Amino acid sequence: MKEQLKEITEKTLEKIKGVSSHEGLNDIRVGVLGKKGELTGLLQNMKNVPADERPEIGRIVNEARETIEEAIKKADEVISEKTLNEKIKNEKTDVTLPASKKAYGHRHPNRVVLEEVEKIFIGMGYEVVHGPEVELDYYNFEALNIPANHPAKDEQDTFYVNEKVVLRTQTSPVQVRQMERGKIPIRMIAPGRVFRADEVDATHSPCFHQVEGMVIDENITFADLKGTLESFAKRIFGEDTKTKFRPHHFPFTEPSAEMDVTCFKCKGKGCRVCKGEGWIEILGCGMIHPLVLERCDVDTKKYSGFAFGIGLERLALLKYEIDDMRLLYENDIRFLKQF
Ligand code: DAH
Image 1 (spheres, rainbow, N blue to C red):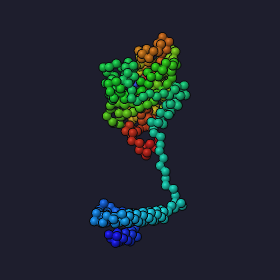
Image 2: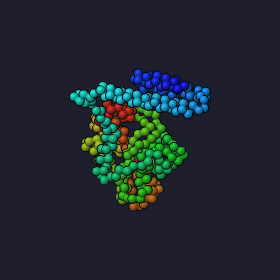
Image 3: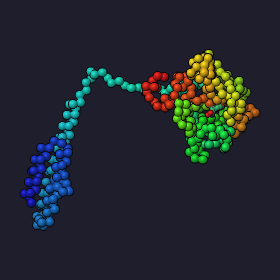
Image 4: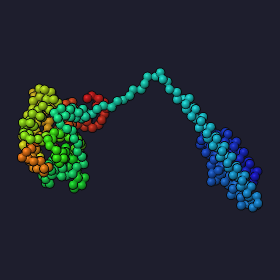
């Protein structure tokens, strides 16, 4: 048995010398030391060894195992080093080559327009505030004078999280949250994402952006609303822009209106951008409904206010003459780079 052990050890050491890959070494390890390996097999014969010789044979077996393991470990290291050296040799960097071109990102047209809108309102003393996208039904509807069963609830196909929680369908709930903070006067805009269960097409998306605006102070009248929104329109579409307020209905304002601007492309003559109308609708607005103010504990004898809601995508599409809203959501850098 001692002879056999010696033979196995020498044969294995010889084999190790001839191997040049990690896989090859592993094969040897398994073939000798593995469950069905030669050395392991030999150990199973221990029962045939006379009892007094067993300790010595045991020692020799252990030595053989250690010798072989050690040799495999060394060979493994040599192979690793060789592979690394070869890799380093082959991966030379030619520092004289021109640098590869870096691709830069680009600001999204929505963001460019939003920054412009924010700048205009901040210039008029407004504060930019934010509200939650996952909103209570109470803030999104009820507090805004849209009770259960109100038809406006159908108009805005709502994503419900549960009976009381929705993905906000508009940024108007931020008005309520701001009023509840109890500090008046208020001059705020609240930009953000809104959600509606709409099919995607050239003018609709289940997720888009609005900018809400609200002013509450003493003696605020419809004239303030008109003056503010007119000067906003001129800033964003050009000084020669004219505005027109058409009566409309929103549950949370009274009276309510939609504001049209003269088409910045044809200056009101009628063209493709304004669909021949000469006018383009850009926002909804109105004097905040007394019921909404009262629900938020605003003293309606002392204070009044106006509010407005702007569709951000609509502004971006108009301003940049983009005719398909879907382009805004694909984030193709070749598209974004144009703005
Ligand atoms: N929330 C309205 C919508 O999504 C837009 C709007 C209209 C907001 C009039 C207002 C407003 O604050 O006064 O259609």
